[in-house]
Amino acid sequence: MRSLLKNLLALGTGCLIAFGVAEMFFRFYEPVELRLRGNKINLATNELYVYGNSTMPKLAGNILHVKNSIGFRGANPPSDFDSRLTILSAGGSTTESYFISEGATWTDQLGLRLKKVFKPMWINNAGLDGHSSFGHLILLKDHILRLKPKMILFLVGINDQKLDKILPNDAELLEDSSGEARLSAKESPSTLKMLWQSMTEKSDVLAFAQNFFRYSQAVMRAHTAPMGHMQPTQLKKESRIIPEDRKRALQQEHARFLKSYEERLVRLIRLSQDNGIEPVLITQTRFGGGEQWVELEFYNEVTRQVARAFNVFLVDLGQTLADDPAYYYDFIHYTEAGSEAVAKVVHQQLCPYLETHYDNYLVEGYSCEKPSKTVQESSSDTYDTMEVFHKAVKRHPDVPDTYLARGMVYWAYYNEYELALEDFEKVLSLDETRVGVRFWKGLSHYDLKQYPEAIAELSAVLAANPGSADAYRYRAMAYGHLKQIQPSIADFTKAIALIPNKGDLHYQRALMLVQSNRHAEAIEDFNISLRFPSYVPPSQSHFNRGGAYFMLNRFPEAIADYSKAIQLQPDYKLAYLMRGLSYLKLGDTAKGCNEVKSNCTQQTCGPDIVAFVASKQC
Image 1 (cartoon, rainbow, N blue to C red):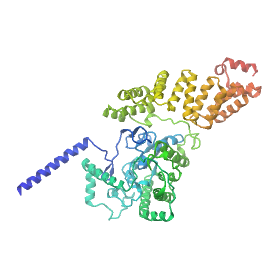
Image 2 (cartoon, rainbow, N blue to C red):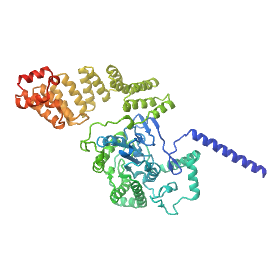
Image 3 (tube, one colour):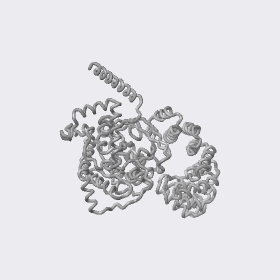
Image 4 (cartoon, rainbow, N blue to C red):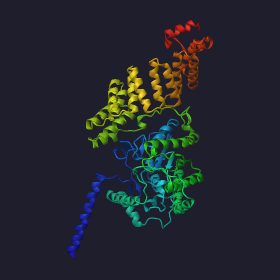
């Protein structure tokens, strides 16, 4: 008996020591990120993830994913947070967009569109892979309510299919503003479960065990719910219409789950509104049709009904987004093209609402119908610190993608082109086969006005990949700065052959054609550039086309273009001057002299124009 007790004591002591060692190990080294500790969401902060992708052809070869200082995707919260139009997107994997790089998620692209109309504003992506509305409620309580953005966009429904029972871990969360539990006593967690929950919140070992169990359960469920990140060999379209009797049977099968989903949506709305946050609901999409589309639409219809009942703004993405296989890399997750399409739909429906309800943030002179052409943001609005990238380089000094990611941030957000070049060169020193990095080297040289070096790097890119329209474009621009007009025109022509309907390419080639005195060809390019709007202001296109008409002595057409430029930009003094000169060329001295005298001096016009004006006795 004494021997048994001694053995049990030794076993218990050994287990305690082993547990302590394991706890220390998990404190210093976390083999996996633990997003849940008990019923608390644990968010990784200030982290950079770089993925080399060779298995999913619809996604980028190198994927850059950054978590900011609060564990979301996007800019860190600014110091003037309360004075901004602040928006969060929340949802599961279709919101987090885990395998879409920074700047290309639908939240990022929506933000770029909105920032052309509203200022100051801040937008972040609070999506978490795998979360249903249960998880959204926990996220609200644990993280979002204290942040208090002005608006939350909930993309919800697809992860709520066939969920109707609250997990014990969620029980603490579901309290209203008065603290009164909304759960019945039967649903409340037991004392033992509450003790376990408290222990998992404090112990890394127990939290890991709990997450491992949840993961194994999720893997088992995945066999019956094929909704995860997968790469089908082919996405085939199906009809979205099924027989009515089968539809009714499915409706009955989902009835109790739909009721539970409706109750959770109401809780999301009330919890948001009670804390001064405006909720917006967005319906879900998936590729194809068949029964799975019909089932998803049941949940989408609940979302629509709840939005109407509680007067909450709804973006009906499910009924608006085109069913295009280019938008998906599996049946539910978006490609970069899909993310752009989602952002476009959300912007089209949401922007006019924001314009009406948040008009104090409108940029003066701009609207949803007339956005500004550029978005000026300081680097502090994008990434407040380089520490996350320095840490990644330090942690993985032999991984080329860490230097590539840091170099791209230097280039894109800080305009530190020399530092970017150093990182791009480091990538090539580690892996000389990464010819694509030479494109970024070329852009860095171009921005440093080192045009011969830019041409050399872009030529190397084109030797390996003659289908790179961007490489042709930037090499053409570098040739233009060196006054090598014919090579510039040739490269713009090759870029246009690859992307025929890109307005700014035609505009840039037109400028080179003008310098080559090929004015009639330039006019054709200006015509095309005006049909396909781009970053080039239309007033500028009309002005330069007017110049080509002027050089061909087609003065009525020149006057029409200068007049259009003035209509679009009333303070365009050079357009007034050129229109006045065109009137003089036509012999209309009254109109011509009036406009020329107002806009022409020896300093602004030069001696030749001054002499011409004098000859007309203005």
